[in-house]
Image 1 (cartoon, rainbow over the protein chains, first blue to last red):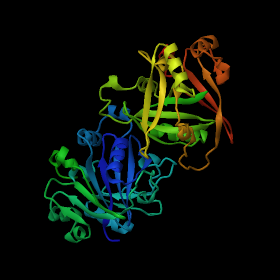
Image 2 (image 1 turned 120 degrees about the horizontal axis):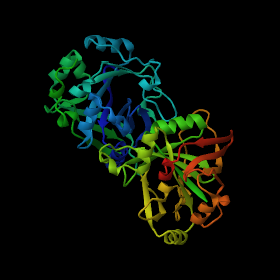
Image 3 (image 1 turned 90 degrees about the horizontal axis):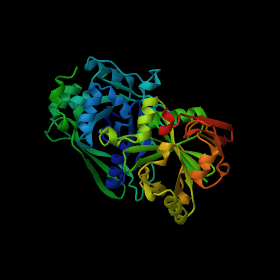
Length: 244
Length: 227
């Protein structure tokens, strides 16, 4: 695959309630149990070639006694409900990932970081090897911009794990399009060329940057459109200045 | 008979995972409760008994500290998961109503929404001004005709090296046998209770597994144990 969409993050004030609501709204199942320190994700697989929505939020409010910029951003964007807060692209090799890191004058969050606290961990202890870029204190998500991932082993990819069974469950067949804010030019500038934008099934709505909707195909079912405001609708990206 | 034991904590994910690693007992996601913004991991203990591990998972609904469960405050102050309470099971609503009446309370429906969406419901008693768990006293519950889907009988997340739980073989309680017998209206020996003479509350449980007996020991959350 060339540059592709891997997953979309949906920030939530209450990940269990949000996942329950989304499953009842769409018929899509989800699985649970993956966490990283004070946060957890409930995963909604979207079908081939391996996409998913991660519903993410705090599950340890004690940790909020010590705030930092990222935690405050999550709280600010979820205070009024669910918001799409991250578009996560994928590449198929470490070389491609390093090329994006170089383009952003950054480094790679390595998949082989030996610190288990640096990785999402599943309920059975499994850690999915995952590398990403750009690295740094502030995620590009806060600017409404995507980051990029590479999985050395996709056989346990989050999109392929079994979901909790729900009544009248819908079988997803993959992302058809993602509606994002801004313009193709703005995204091309971030990614390093229009050719990258053209690889992605995106619709641009000209609103503030970030994800605004996801359309998913489904077996024997109409396309499913999941629409939530972008994080930049709750907290303007201008708050954070230029990405660095 | 014993139905479930509550373990309150600050982070339900790390608490359940660490407990699984320490005991080799599996667990699964129990979902969230309706009235207070709490998430649950459920750990079957065998013999129709389970451990419910809970923490707050909604920072907004509980921004007002007075809305946080009492056991949460206790777990945070002790920097430890705490045993918050014991729930015993009766078979009929008549029995539950009688127990509620005897203790000057009422009954209440407890509702939890697991990830598959089908709500888990049981009735509990006695409900009154004070939560008996806060003073280290057991409560009672009734599943009516829903025992077939009891949380102790649901599949756990498959993890390497898990043991098969066979049942709770003892529970260590504070206070005295006489005090407990007065509260229960039955002999505590029938419930495999051991008394350590300390302040009221649950201190430890012993669980028989196919890999041997294990002990889970945590501080009691009950208010009387603070001194």
